[in-house]
Structure formats: structure tokens, C-alpha cells
Amino acid sequence: MPSSILWERHALLASEKADNAVASGRKLGPLHGVPVTIKVNVDTKGRPTTNGMEAFKDVIAPDNSPLVQNLLNAGAIIIGRTNTPEMSMRLTTDNPLYGLTRNPWNLEMSPGGSSGGAAASAAAGFGAIHHGNDIAGSLRYPATACGLSTVKPGLGRVPAYLPSAKAERGILAQLMSVQGAICREVKDVRLATQVLIGHDPRDPWHVPMPFSQPGSSLSKIGFCREAHGYPIHEGILANLDRAASILEDAGYQVEEIETPPIAEAC
Image (tube, rainbow, N blue to C red; front, side, top):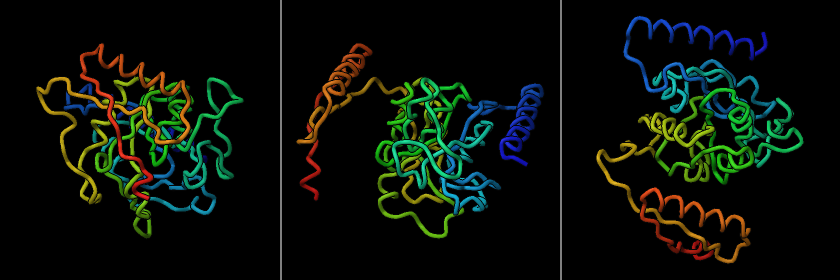
């Protein structure tokens, strides 16, 4: 049976249970009944974790990755998986297993990558919250390519673990790869992130701290325009200044800061 039909049946059954919970007056989670998608490079119990690879098409997840379990605990309904390039290692989304993912705004354009399937789904209105992950732009680039909202959480903010993996991730992935969400609106990214950060002891990097401090006032925000010798488009600098101005108008104290050059660490 095609996986799309299996996901449809699973989602319909979950939706019926969600409706029954509302009707019976049970306590509901913050994402009760909200449709979400999961990128194919993390584990969803009983489903293949392919990471866009033909060689991994029969790797069946023995359990949910932490972020998947956090979404389910919050009441979300998984309606499908989203595409990625092989091993999630390119800024476009195409692979021999699932084929090419296109940008819904223009079918001749790329949706970016590696979370291009998540971005295409969000742009097409296929669900509200779309999981993705990011080492060097895999959330941010597709969100930009499709006109969407996202954020790359800091290390240790969202727990990560792959039950199907035979060995621990390489140190690059451990230090730089993070889990997050792509949505049509910032408020949805905020809500999704509040759910994703739920603690899971399987990730030793995870820091179980609150999303925000109760009663805290608007804080300072630092931003950097310095590229340390690397080329940077004038339009990017203009957008940084525009974002800083919007945040100032919203009441934040915005300060331009300098960061140490990466060359000193090499």
C-alpha cells in the first residue's frame, strides 16, 4: 500500500480521536489536532527513515525521535513526511528515491534545501507546522526561498536523537545540527518551538530550560553586519538594518555588535 494512503488513514484516525477528546471535555495539548509534517531524516516510529537515500528505504524507526514525540504529546497530528536531498547535504531538494521537490510559487524554481520539502509543504498550505533541521542553512535557506518563517535554535535547545542509528552522529552534527520548524507565520514558529524544546534524556546536549522568563520585559538584541572579508550582498545588509528598525519600533533595545572572526579559530 502506498505510504501516502497509510499516512491518510493514520491522520484520519488521529483526527477522529482528537474530535472525541474535544467532545468529552478532556484536557487538550497546545497543538491539539494541528496537522504537522516530519522531515524524512528523523525517526517516526514504524516508518522508514530514508534521509533521501535508496539504501535507507528499509530502515524502519524503532521509536520516535524526541521532537516527534514532543509534537505528539502536544496533540499534533502527523500527516506525512517531507523530502530532502541525499543525506540532507545540499541547498536544493532532489534525490533518486523521491524525486524533485519544486517551489509552489514557481514550479521552475527550487524551494531550497535541505528542508525543501518542509518549505514547499508550508508554502502550499499543506499543514500548519513543518519540521526541519539545520547545520548551515537547511531551515533558513528554504524558508527564504519560499517566503516563510523559521529560526535556527541554539545548540541544546531542541533535543535530538535517532533511535534507528547504529552509531552516534559525527561531532559536526552534534555541535551544529539543530531541529526546528518552518511555518507561514512567526507566531506559529514560536508555538512550535515552545513544544519542540520539551526535555528528553536521550540527548546529553539538551538543556531543559524554559522558553522565556515569566514576566520578563523586552530584552536587548544584538546583530552583526560584519562579514570578516567574505562577500555579502547589499540586499542582505539592507534587510538586516530593516529588521533592526522593526525590532526597535516594537520596543526592543537593538545594538550592533562585533563577533570574533572565524579565521582566528582556524
